[in-house]
Length: 72
Image (cartoon, rainbow, N blue to C red; front, top):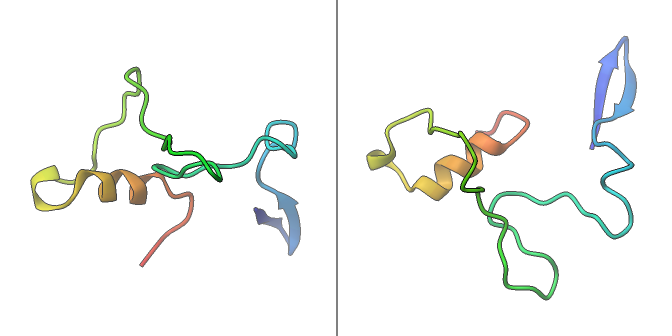
């Protein structure tokens, strides 16, 4: 992932030391290739949805809230 930092200069957003050849960036509920264990919230996570959960699917809300950029 590349972001613009200033005056048109670009920089890699992710820590290359963490996301190496065998360590990939994962999104909420994604699975590793060939595996069946989705990435879920930790029991220690302090996240609280920004909108009322009754109105939408909680997994959808968590997914959208976890995105780095705006979605539409």
